[in-house]
Image (tube, rainbow, N blue to C red; front, side, top):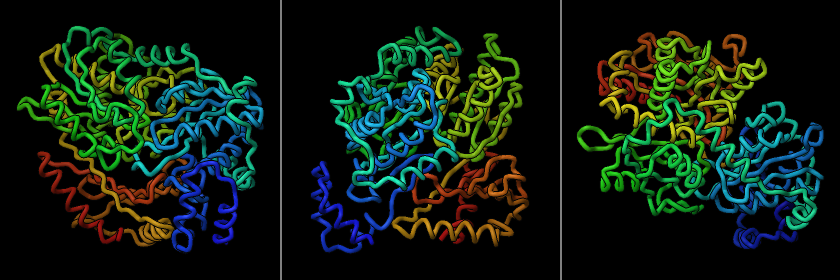
Length: 560
């Protein structure tokens, strides 16, 4: 069957020259043809994500058109404004995919609000809400390597689509032939008919105003004299992040030149992920050269931010996602209590794989901390629940260990723009009282204990990868380990059992050990890998790291 599909693509007018060239290159290579045509990219709550290229199992304009027809069919059942917002980041083919998605929607009689320049995930979520859209589409593959692109779908609330809606869209996609089943009109015709319109400046300004309204101590940055190095990692963060930092009074910002402007090849690092040292390496070198107080980097769709802080010795220390989540929760809670702006019965939200130290911080400040499944849509879901009760302002902060943060209910996804602002504000405040982010982090550890949260990943590439991952998870469920690294496994929590967790079903296993440490095992929702999350504790960081290594060694044969 895959050979038949390959032949059909060979005979089609594919529009994109790169696709035709690739078809020629793989002629006669059965494995290459099977890899591209024996399966189709599946559409889930994270939308689509895959390698760029020809075929049903690759990201290309035909797969994007097919997916967008599924979105259109779903939107047409919704009533309302019959409008969809679209944005895109700097990934290869990003504008092509955004343009073709707009053309499919227009051909279905659906209004489109398209950004006229690449803009980040939070801006797409905001525009979806601002224009009362039925849905939103973000063309991005987040922090994946350059050969990837993807397609995120959002609901009317600006949050990624639910499992139920994703299933409806996927069913519609499966009924649509990939090579011509989608309705289509030219982009120019869509614009001429008034069906495709660009996002207005009023919407962009409202987004910036919403971000800046989340300042805890307005004005503190104007006199702090902070010196920053910033890298947008060749993505969408440059314009919105520097705009907001300038608005709050931070003038001394040096941009990493090699990573300043959009470049979908991401030539300066293996992949543009602010979690990895290689992505921050050029920024760190520039920070040392300029004597910057902080180095910040946002990923291509600017929904996540990583930082390095200068220590008293003059060296730079990377701050983990868990550490920054705890620091921001502590700063926001303490600052809003001091300023008298803390709402009654405040709520913060974190993912179940994020640090338990946040629970201690929240308890200290009288904040209700809710733990949800991995994926920021579940944090968005908690905001939505508060909003339906007219209590959205109770939400003060949400975070995931993977460098995603949000303060405020103006969007429903993680936002590196507001996070960058608050991190800088926090640094300015601590400087004003003779302290620093590093010093405050050490105070937190001294008060609550030295927690270490670390993540390891095991990759399973190829068509058989998903099957192998499923077998490993099944084996862990049927025969969970009795002990790990000499510590008895006290409890095993299986998130497939929603009755016991009180949360929706999820493919997550938690092994709680007798010494209070834990190991969480979870297949990635967007990549062919299994992630293991370790929580260890020690008298000092070295002891906590040694504990983590012992547990990692014990888990390795179980995930082989």
